[in-house]
Image (tube, rainbow, N blue to C red; front, top):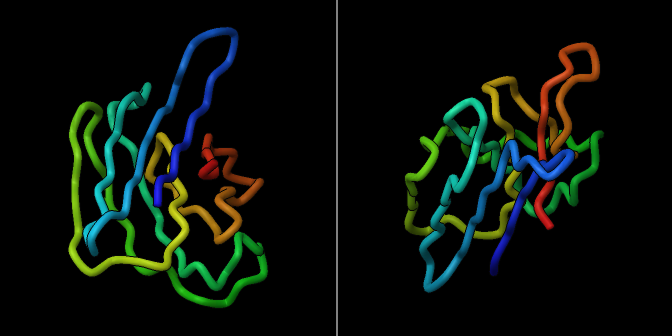
Length: 106
């Protein structure tokens, strides 16, 4: 399974990330980020990107631009990624009052 997230405006890519799950290993690659970091929040796939999902995130972590991180045994999740550390909800959107830039996987 592959997930890609991208935020671009006027030809400038401010965030680009790829997550791949293969043979029981999830690998996260931060390709571009204006902040220098991709901040990931992983929700159970059962949330289905519903804002009202009451399930807690499976994991939160950051990966530096140009680096990768991997976890064995991680599956059935939806990754949400942002350029800053503000927590994202299960719909991959920040609290509107906080106004952070985030990308939902495609």
